[in-house]
Length: 103
Image 1 (spheres, rainbow, N blue to C red):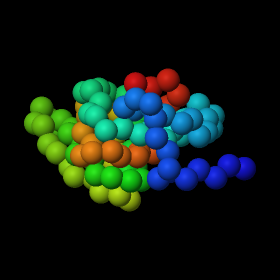
Image 2 (image 1 turned 90 degrees about the vertical axis):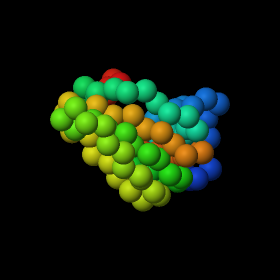
Image 3 (image 1 turned 180 degrees about the horizontal axis):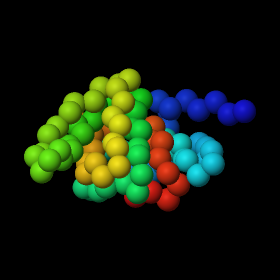
Image 4 (image 1 turned 120 degrees about the horizontal axis):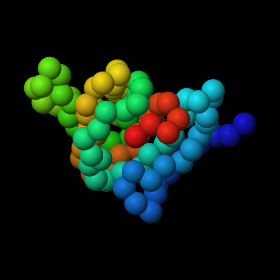
């Protein structure tokens, strides 16, 4: 059993992570960041839940870039082939559930 106080988690670099669980090849990680990630497409599906802060999620749909503002408690689901990049507004804590080894 483990209790994680996500609002207290920080990392020494942007997108630093705390590995929480690996369940049959699906990882759950808590990330801290204050900088954008990079455009990418995951190897599978991804669940991206904002636990603290605000994140602008840029994604491409049919070649058109769109932006969704994600507040604390919001969840973004990136299906297979969804190109996306997260841009936090200041510091943010994010729970990511995805296939082990995914980008």
